[in-house]
Picture 1 (tube, one colour):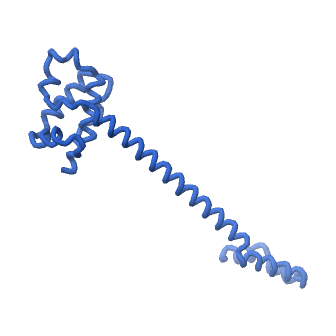
Picture 2 (cartoon, helix red, strand yellow; picture 1 turned 90 degrees about the vertical axis):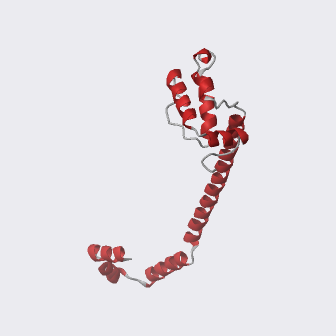
Picture 3 (cartoon, one colour; picture 1 turned 120 degrees about the vertical axis):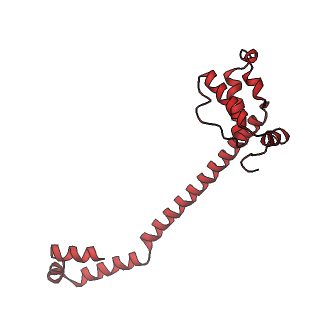
Length: 160
């Protein structure tokens, strides 16, 4: 305890101890030191820290389980989306009234779930921007990737 030694020098604790030291005071100090050394106070602190670590570990397990369930729900929801990977369908002016912003968002989510690089901001409120972005993404896909996406709906293109 370097700081304690420095403190004793500055506030004359050692001189005070020499002047007021009694047998009773020394036995009291020794008893207190032994109580601390036996770990009575530290044992309680260690127990408290251990309980806190266990509680946090349990909370993390619960959080991971919630995330896993949420991810499974998302995966099943995305797998239920019908995929239309033909860019001519999306760019056809006759289908413009049929295509909704929600359909564009779902198609983009389906592509993202498969690992296709979809730029951010296409799922916004602007239907024309989202539709143009979807068409650009679909036109940028190679025929091999489209084959993989259509044959196995749960494949991640980035892994393949």
